[in-house]
Length: 175
Image: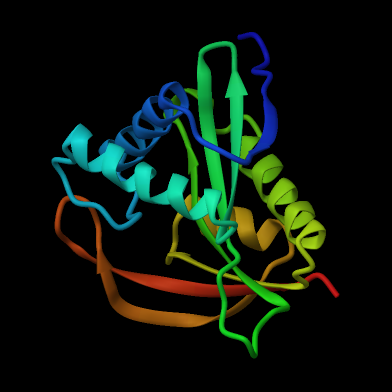
């Protein structure tokens, strides 16, 4: 099997073609079982509407959007929520770290996380927070990358098929 190659970049705006590719990644993640705020079936129009709202937040500087692209287009993405209360200008939330099934287990998740940390530093943020499904591959990734586990909340959300799942919170001090 050939090694997958990709590039990770920060988007400052989202054109129509990239919006469609981002919708592909979101639909693939949900269909693959990721609990990322959506239920099955995920209509493509709902995925487009989500990314349209993210594109608006990116244009306003409220979010940083990273994408990974391979020869087939966008294969991964991660967001940094920069909009924060006045007493938290040093902090950001990591959101929607998604890797298309075609690129999983290739190191892309770790590359996206390293890039999100670098972006946070560039944006003057030195404390990051995220949550993920307890026991997930993402949880193992964050722990392997040195994120600090805070705790679990039972029955926090639902998997795309409807069963409840717990979430685990993490933070990363970049200071």
